[in-house]
Amino acid sequence: KNAQDEWKKALDNQQKILDEWGITLAELKKLMLETGIQSRSKRGN
Image 1 (cartoon, rainbow, N blue to C red):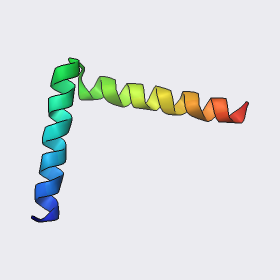
Image 2: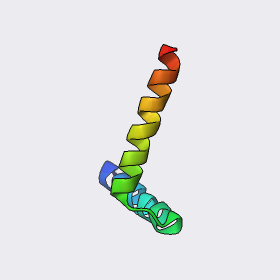
Image 3: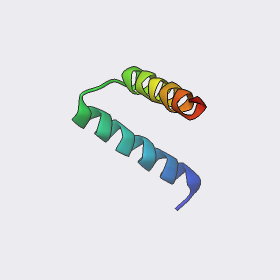
Image 4: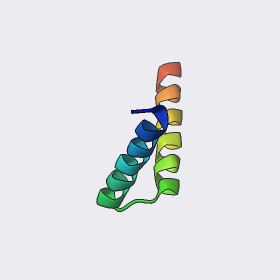
């Protein structure tokens, strides 16, 4: 197996998760950004 196969498998798995959750990639990115900001601000306090 090469890196490209692994990358494609990871993308397929991600798409499967998104389909199951019923959220879009944009919503996931927004969620990740928000949780990242929250965790950073918590650390600051």
